[in-house]
Length: 219
Image 1 (cartoon, rainbow, N blue to C red):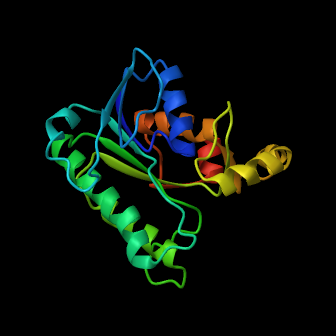
Image 2 (cartoon, rainbow, N blue to C red; image 1 turned 30 degrees about the vertical axis):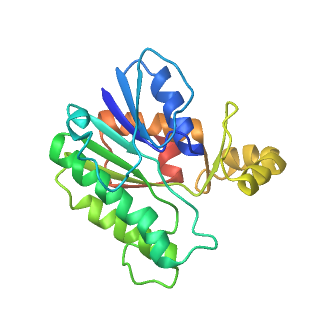
């Protein structure tokens, strides 16, 4: 399986990249990002790309892939709806539309979040935007699309969040997060479990298009 990965320098993306490089079912990984991952591996190739709304300059290099793991995302804290929509909806749809054109047999897996509002009409801004993003991604002509909606995610294997206050919380709460992952799989998962689940779902499929934390852990 040949994989394209967006968001490889973020916390979730770091975990997904790690699992892809370790998994024998993944033959190659193309990372598309604004900055290099700093990793070297025989299966890894990177394209540094500055404009996440226009892929015309690299579109031909995005053909021939089996799966896309879209882990690019931002927190909505302190952000207005227009800006959050741009960084969430516009960027995801620009990439996915290009990929669907080049890879009609591709499986797309998008990292969303627990509480996403598929009606697009709820009171939470971030949930409405994520809901519209999910809905419009599912309308694109891919072989299959899956929405991963994890609740809390514990970083493993030295992976760190790029957001300082988030990383500080993870450091302080690490023992509790480990316990929650065992006792409350509906609310907790890990970067390792997310990465492994993405690979398995891309390869084997899943009975439903939306996976919550409990589904991710079960996979």
